[in-house]
Length: 269
Image (cartoon, rainbow, N blue to C red):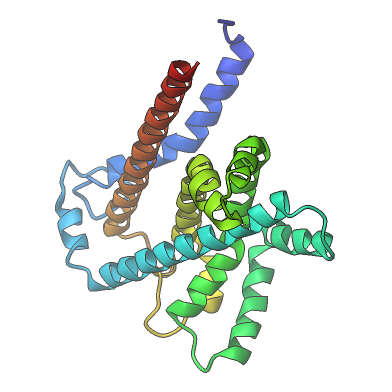
């Protein structure tokens, strides 16, 4: 195995340090006993206790989780269908326009996207709320899902689909029983990516929210403008822990499926 050069190792170390040292500091100061978040006042877990008694944060967290789950599910369905049409659909009238509209939200500024959706929803709905946030998040999250799934479809062996068709399977049965199980890791990755994007979004949600639909990023931002509360550090630590556990579970399960597939292929040969 080729060893990494000192330049690559240094660059990798600095990159990870830039990304993760602020998170580590945040986690450490979530156990700060003092009210001043910038000065260490001794180890304590009291802010976690106060966090679970803060109704505003709890309500915002519940709204955010529901929005993120609905967005991830809807984005995964639409993004997977979009990717399948673009990769397997061949040439059809309007394909270039369809492809451009699919990937446009990836490069469009969040402010422009949020403002345009605000004007659209104002014309469509009498009152905006959780539904409009889900629709807005789905608009850009499904684009990321389609990119992830498309990359897997491009490397997927189409002879398996052709064999299923030759054996009499319909297009729908082929997709459900052959294509979908093989692209499942990409679909799950797309779902997790869409969930994270929805969980993290502030700009678009602030344009499309309504009464009773305050998400956690909006609530945190409004509180930070008045000063960082220790509960925010505790809440951020919990979110980091949830995301980390989810990524680890998916990584281990994906690795097990890969090893199992390799073992099955070796047995077949």
